[in-house]
Each structure stands twice: as C-alpha cells, then as structure tokens.
Length: 355
Image (cartoon, rainbow, N blue to C red; front, side, top):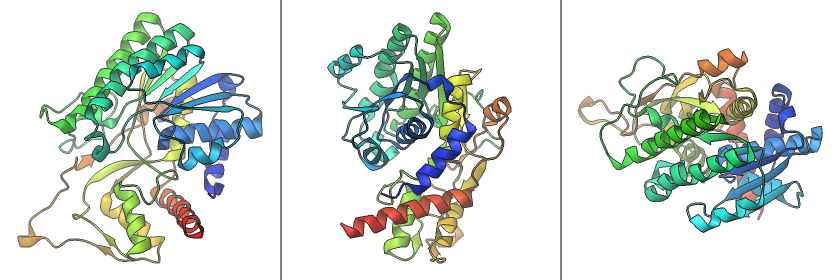
C-alpha cells in the first residue's frame, strides 16, 4: 500500500502538535482498525520512527489488523496488537497486565448499517466497556479520551445555526436509530462523573463526518461508494438529490485535534471537525473532478416533489471552542481533502489489480 499521502499527513501533524507528553509513555488505542484509531497509531508510530518518541503503543480490535494498521504493524516492536472482542467481559482481563499513560477509546460501530445490526454490542462498548477503562484510568492515573459522536445532538435539520458543545439532545422519537446517540450520551455522563469525582484527565470528543485515507473504495459509506462508482461504472449515481448537508473533517485535521486535546485541553468536551459544510451533491462533484469529470447522475423526481434524504438532512457542527483555545483556523479544504482521499484509493485499487 502506498503510504506517501499518510506519511505527509503524519509529518504535518507532528510539525503542528507538541507530542512531548507522549515521550517514553504507554498508549492504548481501542478500535485500532477504525479510521480514527488507525490514524492515531500511524502518527505515533511516525513520531517514534523519526522523532525518537519512544512511545509504547498497545492497540486492540475485534478483528485482525487490516488496511492502515496492517501496513504499520508488520514486525514493529513498539506496537503490540491484541485481538479481542471487548463486549465479552472476560476479554477485558488481559488489560490488568498493563499500565497505560494514555487511553483512546475509539471502539465502536461507526456506520449506521453496521451498528443497527449490533445495537446491543454498540451500547455495551459505549457504557460497560467505557466504565471498565475509566476505572483503569483511575487506577493508572491515565489520561483517557472517549470518542463520542455528533449523534448526541439528535435531529438537527431544523436548526439554522451551527451547533456547539452546549446544544442539548433533541430526539424523542425512541427509534432504534436513536440508540447510538443515546448510548454515547450515557458514556459522556460516565466520563463527567469520573472526571469530577476523581479529578481525572478525561476528555470527550464528538467527531462529525470524517473522511480520508483509511476508508476504502469498497466501504459502504456514501463517500467511498462514489469513488467505487467512478472507477467501475464511470459515473456517480446518487440515490436522491444530494441536498443533505453535513460538516466534513479531513482525517489528519481531526487527528491533530485529538492529540492536542488529550495533552493540553482545558475543557472536557470538544466538537472535532473541519470548517466545510458540504452537501452530498458537492462531494460527488468534487470526486468527479478527480475522474475526468465523470457524470454525476441524479434520480428523476416525479411531480417536482422535493426530496430530502431520510438520514439527518442537516448536521452543521461548530468546532469554534477548539479553534479559539488552540488558535488554529486553517484546515484542509474539501477540494484538497477529496483529492488526497481519491488518490490514496486509486493506489489501493491499482495494488488490488496486481495481486
């Protein structure tokens, strides 16, 4: 796999973030195969290799290493991988053998199509498993970061302003779709209790829609399916008019935020995202630009009926708290982010054809 783009991202992050607090420390990353977890590992591994950070990385995932993580681990002596299903209680016992300075709890089912099929496991990861590692953080005096979600805000399509960290949960539908956001809210409450009761360095991040290298064109997320369609079908078919608007964050930008927050954050909760509010249609057009402007095809609407995606049609998230605290404003714009994302996937596609 061509790591050129990822290495450039890692170089940018290590230039922007002072990682001194990680020097000679032990770090646990749960959900290591996911986009967010694997990029954290990539950055720390890069810093070990080129800046002598000497950071011991222990990572855990339900499945064997794949994608970015598989490429990083190899024979790397500074990374220990544990294959464990954390929803099985006895599997947590192994962590008693280690002491951690930093814990990143990224373990979750991020895609709605996946966690809707694993609702019980999703709730356990966000509550029982989190409580175990909060207790572990108390014992080890670790800094812990819980990866929540903007789903904690509920339905937001009727909100005209961007949403900050103080916005209250807004979903009383009690549908299965709500279970994800509700369980994240419960996890956040657990974090608040441990932080205040035991004076611990506990942080909660609420990533918005994050994209970039690490999401394969074979993935079922819309942004990946657009690349798949551009490669194989020479056109990008949308399921609707693509008017759904969401805040997008390029993976290296949000990873930089995570590493700053867990070391130097003054607040407990942070929205972590980019600055672009982009429609699905705009994303499809940006991807099209990287494939010689393949057609973006919209379905016909009968009787000119207005169509809005059944998913949350508008999710506009503010990361102003972070930007003000860390004095950072420049983020990867959607054109540059999509370009890097597409090129990484094209390398992945070419590699698959050689096998």
